[in-house]
Each structure stands twice: as C-alpha cells, then as structure tokens.
Image 1 (cartoon, rainbow, N blue to C red):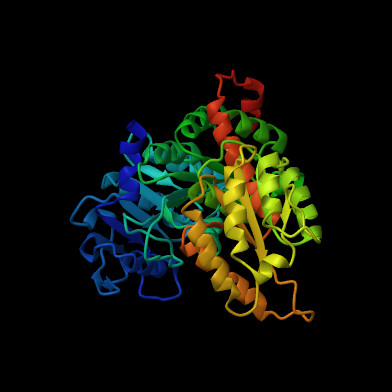
Image 2 (cartoon, one colour; image 1 turned 45 degrees about the horizontal axis):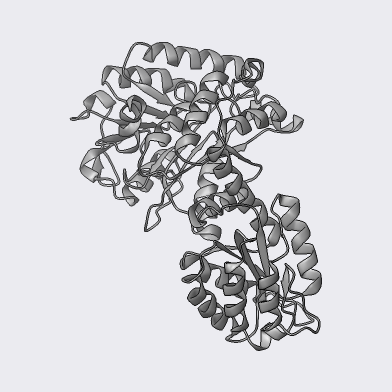
Length: 491
C-alpha cells in the first residue's frame, strides 16, 4: 500500500492552490480556479497565488505559496516557463506534496528541446531528496470526483464512476471524459494527465489505481515509458487485480515521430509494445472509441464462459455478414443443439427464415415482437451457447418502446450474458436523418437501464472478445519469464 498512501493526497487534497490565478477570464489560471470551485472544492482551502492580485473570484490571493496559512497538498502552476524554477523552489520550501506544472515548452518543444530538457533536469534536482513530487510538465493534472478536482475545461458530472484514466495527453483526457459519458454512459472516479512525466509517470499512477478500491477498470493512454521493466512488472501485477485497457499512441512510424514533439517520448515499436501488453494480460486498443467500447463491456458484461455466440435477429444477408464480423473478431457461432432447433422450428415460420445460428426470424418478428421472448429463452437453454447477441434496427412509431419492454422483461430470466446491437433503419427508402437521432435516443435508453448495447456488430464483437480474452488469460495464467531485450527497447 506504499504507493497508494504516497499518491492518495494527490487525488484527495485537503488544501490546494493555483499559481497564476487571475481575474482575467481568458487565462488558464482563472480556468483552473473556476473548474475546481465548480467541482465543489471547499473555498476556504483553495488559494489563488499571484503577487499582482488581491483576490481572485472572491478569494483572497497570496503572493507566494509560502504565505498560505496551511500545508498544501496540490499546487497547479499555470505561469510562463521562465518563472517555473522559482515557483518549484517555493513549493519545496513550503513542503508542498504535489506540484502540477501545466506550462509547456520543455523537452516536447521542437524549437527549444535542448533548453527544455535542461530545465526539466534542473526541476528534478530542485525536488531531489524532498517530499515534493512533480506532475507534468505539459499536462492537465488531476480530475477526482471524490476529491473535487477538475481540469481548466470544466468536467462536472452529477455522479462519479468506477473507471480511472491515466493519460500522457491532456487533450485526450478532456475529450475522453465527455466522449465516454455521452456515447457509453461511462463516468470516471479519477483521471490524471501527466504530460512529459519527468517525475511521476504512468507506472506510478498505474500502481495507485491498481490499489484504489474506487477503481474497477483502469484506462491508459501512453506514448512511451522511462523504465520498461518496472512498467511491465507493475502492469502484470495490476492485471491480476482488475482489467487494464491500454491505448498506445505512436504505434505507426509517423505516429512514433509525432510523440517526440507532443510529450518528448520515445515510443518504441508497436510489435514490442503489443508483445509486452499481451504478456502482461493488458487489453490493447487503437482508438478512443475502442477504448470506450471495451471499457463499457468490462463494466456491463458478466464474463461469458466461452466464445460460442448465438445471433438472434431478422434479415438473411444481415445474418451472414454479422456472422463474418463476429467470427473475424474471434467469437464463434456454433450450430444449436438438435433439441433447440426442433423447438425453434415450432416458433419460427419455415419460409424465408433460418434457425441454425444465426436465427433469422425474417419480417415475421416485426409483426410479433413477442416472438423474441420464446426464442431467447430457448437459446439461453442451449448447452452449445455461452453468449447471446440480439440485433435489431430502429423501427417506426412505438415499436422501439415495445421491443425495449420485451428485452427488459426477458433479461431478468436469462442465465447467459446478453449483448444488443441496434442497426440504422433500413427504411424508409429515402434516408431521413431524424431516424439516426431516434437510434441514439434508443441506445441511451438501453444504456440508462444497464444494457450492453452497440451500434454495430464489429464494435460489439471486438469488445466482447477482448473481455473474454482477459478473463481466459486470468484463468490460464502461468508465470512467464519476461524477455529482457523487449523491455529494454520500450524505454
């Protein structure tokens, strides 16, 4: 619990300050003050630091951090680079626990890279042997629902969540917060953007989140690490406790070059990263969208016993391409047992339909949506099936609401996990954008009721398979000797 105790006051500070706080509404010092206050951080323990201001947002300002009347756990620094060293010295003198440097222009700077590297070394020398730690530079810092902290771009959801996100990119952290909430109903317990990570880096936060009881799933966006063996060891230990979903930035040759000018990181080859992540039991994804899709599956899916999937829906061609997509992702669509096929044959008409898996109930099901109840019950009892995927499309009128009620009712009786895919409408002949708006509304309705739902078969199949892979990895885990040459190349 050493790392948890060391970092917990970063996410739950008793007192905080913003160096560079100002009344000017167009500066980041003002934005940080506003966002932290909007999160509900106690006014009496938040201190604006600016020698040129008497007060900021109605709170008394102080010239230096040493002038603050209580010990500070967390200090945001949003000032020009030339003033950073003196402020960090002040923070060390005041025994500040964490200094979050928002300011950029360090080793990630193309035009001033060498000067930036030199300044980073000087900052590390200033804090050497002290109890002060640096977050950043070139990062957004900390969001904590319970700790009442946020970014300069206000993220203030009504409830927290059970996912925590550590990101080398500040922009991704801000985007992830709103994207995941809007599209997947995912909310976060904690987020940290650590930028260049000259002191605390991804491995430190990973170790903390692995121990954090409020975190059920860990999300990571990383471009590079300083100590490959330590990262691998920590990642392998973390995945034994909870799922870790990793989005590795810079996995192409061009992307790898771009990371150097973003956070000053050497990315390493994607082949090596993929090998290390797989060996550690982490789940690798390649976009923010996929990160959200897979995380949602971890949160909403009871782990299936295997990959054998029943596809239930309407449409012959759709059944074929859905099977292709599902099996391409790694899942399987085995034939139903003879008993299941016989009983399905008594329910599903034998004209223009299919009951071998996938089930194509054709247009008959549109006339009688309750047909799904008996179909799903029979499939649920089939010993060849581990998982059920129900696919449908947006319908007209109150049919969507009727289907929702049917699926909600049957869910309570199903033993096997249920995944829903809601396709765009295949009619009317002339495309109408309002049908897509209707589809989004319906998807949100299912999400709000706790369903795992996706807008396409490939997204659903990929996410579900990666969740199954993780749990199978845990089940079959054997001690593997890490390949040292791979870990060295990560650095």
